[in-house]
Length: 366
Image (cartoon, rainbow, N blue to C red; front, top):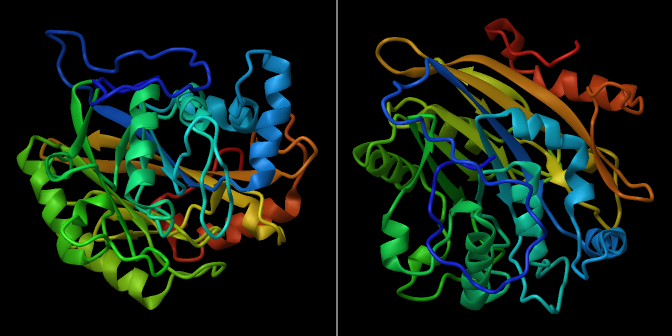
């Protein structure tokens, strides 16, 4: 499941095997669809325990490569059913032989990119507080590995020319743009004269890039924002103010948020949706606290109103990182899923806490 695209570059970086790379562009002569679905998920945060799990799972594959595919298998059906699936790669990718590291300066195995493609993701936002953990070399190496896997990206770039070209994906004939920005980079300065290496968050920058995407043909623009306060379930005043400003323009149709490492609410503002924080997609913190293992896959059905594309239906699918062993990502609404009533109740309460249900927000099976 891959949006029509041509990677900007390829390399010899090894990736996990991929099941398919099928174009979603509409066949020639067919008109645009009247609706399409987008799924977005939370932080992909590769702590050392997840690399160790991939090492153990490689033994089953027998191909000599770390294998992250089983880690994501529980969410694969949800991701593959989407017309466009977006992840958030919070960490840099290392060279094939490492060294690999976790907090505070992440460096994850490059096989991760292929596993994300195999799961069904089409693109990842890359602007996070860890984007510059491995410096300019790490940014370039990460984007090469993503290109090699066929995984689109936005939020960091290798040069001015690449940064100036908005990410626009063809989803069955609908042009969908994505922009990605982070509040900061853990005190690591962006190298002088190279602002393109990592997108730093400001309302003006997000709006300007969204407008460039519109000018380049985007019918819909999604903003992926790394923002807010860690381990806080409610959005900060800065988040809510920025969401109101961005969704008060006609340039942005949807905001999906990351960084808090816990689930935050979804809310409709000016007729558009913001998912303030999707929680962790996959992570294994040194000191798990339960809520840091929870996340959601936010699902949006866009429908054409005759004038523009709007979200006609918003849903959330609760997820949980089962610390095992083995460590696995679970869809808590899947048939036969291990019961996690406390996580479901908490996720429902938080996600719906800003009135989303009044505007039709729901979760499957509830």
